[in-house]
Length: 183
Length: 436
Image (cartoon, rainbow over all chains, first blue to last red; front, side, top):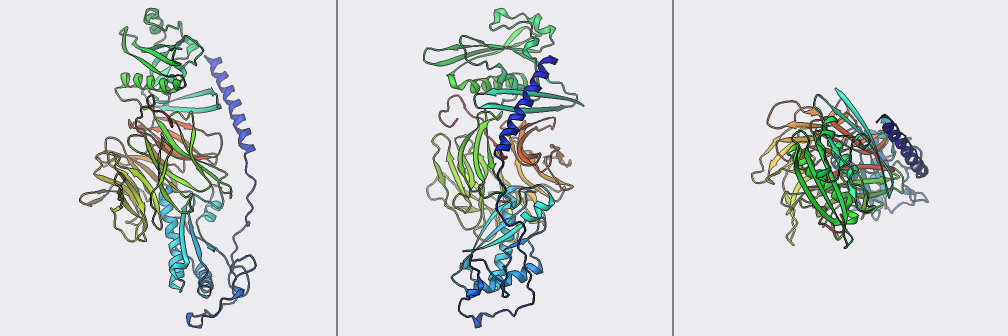
């Protein structure tokens, strides 16, 4: 009996080693993505362009890779982060989103996809809804700032698409986010 | 408290699968049973190991190892009850396989009560030869029911989502179906976009799940026999959390087409399908619907009170009552077949567990799982066990716990993250053809 047990354990260990071997072979290479979120705070406050002064689409709104730019020409942040279980945007995020709204009102042909995301804690379906709530927070701010509803598309991925696949607070804080993507 | 740890290893044609079973029981003693290796007229694999393993996993039996048996009878005239009494056995199962000229196989078995010295159950099962595991699970079901009085749920399947390369741009999402013991996994659908919330139709012939394959969430119904997939017309926003009604005619789901996640039901048998709205709560998330066994009400998660809690709504009167009060996060509830007991995800001190609650008493919910980030509880059709998703060393795995919390085991996977298990209803695995 004892011998049989030990034999089984040994076999299991062999099995585990094989599995570990397989797992390490399939280890994905680190994904090519920017290491840190680009967080640009306006250096000086810019006067908000009003709808009536609406001008020609400005070529200075995007860089050569079609990334949105601040009035001072720096790359505008496209990720906005949230507290656990929350969908509230910070005052700084609202300032950044105002710049996005300005770009979108100047460029009526541009469309925006807003993605809502959550960290892995909590249930998947609730997180799908929470991700939508986060996306809605961004979307309703943009529409109240003059962006047309038809320019915006929103999709919640809940916890299904983490930016950081880790399982600690540092990963979770990167995953609770809304992302705006220009099309 | 006695803790028994079983290490079991099975080599199969697919490779090596290891399953660690930790059975944690109180004063209750598992029933000693001898499952004698079945006699075989050919080289067909012995199924007694599969039967033993099913019985072990129930936590209610402790099969003796075959090396400790004094004899290996395969027919009644070879049974000497004294041999089994000496070993302290309460039950004895013997059997034999016979090859048939048509390529099939017939397995006969007999179950004896050792102290009464009599046969209590016997059976004969004929099936194609590649259905040996199905035959074994069927016999385990018969033995389990004969001895415990509860219908066995070994001849069932589990659906789950397997994700490879999560967090990278080449993640793969696979909808998998395996036997209830995790064996014979096969992929039903695969995409580079998220898949979630798989669930079964009550007859076990169809499944529903959420797929982002078009870039937007849509509910898909897939026939298991033909693999025909049908995407339901999707609305702007969420299209998610599908759950078949107990009669299989309706699907409960979550849509946010009116700007906010609400629960809907939809007839799926009729051609003109139009979702019927069940909840109306403009500022709250209402999601994760599940049916009561009588099909007259839905249970669901809502944060209308500020935090996610479980509610029940009567579909005819729309009367809604709150069911959970302990803690600030209770979600994804499912009712036991008795309609009286609830299992759900419960957060306590930042840890997510599976909890169990009796709706007819005021007792506090009982925490069934000691792991963390536990979610997606799904009940076996006989209500004795539930499967759920948890994390083990940073990887998503599936685990099973009995409703009394005393039996626990993990189903490790060899690669990727495994999540969102859904336990099938009772299935006729021996008559079903492709897909099973």
